[in-house]
Image (cartoon, rainbow, N blue to C red; front, side, top):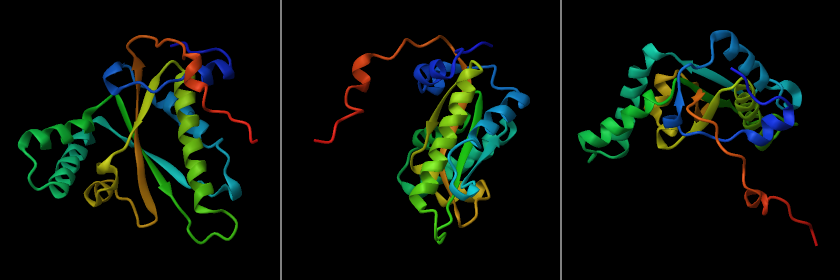
Length: 192
């Protein structure tokens, strides 16, 4: 695998890719270790580490699919079998699946909840950038299943933890094109 060569190349060329556009191979255990280590470089006031990742191994995806199915049924008791199957199928998206868990310390006198959430966001971006630099693609998926008690319990989250999103990683089927200049037009304004 070869990816972009400089840090700026990595940042400017990374795009979220649909799980449908990601194929095997997924990162190896050694590559995943490096990718997760990159997340720890996020700005983290007082080193609270208000985030962690859970690897969902292939043999546990059917358990997650069951949790997604039950979460859908609880949210919408009138769900059809097709609706439940569609919800369950999301557990099998992409070659590698991680859960991003945010652990918020609500009463820290110096580090706000917002600061901790920004740290978790920076951590997942570092993770995605590291994966991209190694030639992998990825995306985040959340949705209503992420807030479901059934899914939280299936992943053994405690009361201080929230499931923020799922991270899907794999090898891009084909390279994506460069960003268009107009994608960035509204990102910087001047205070008048």
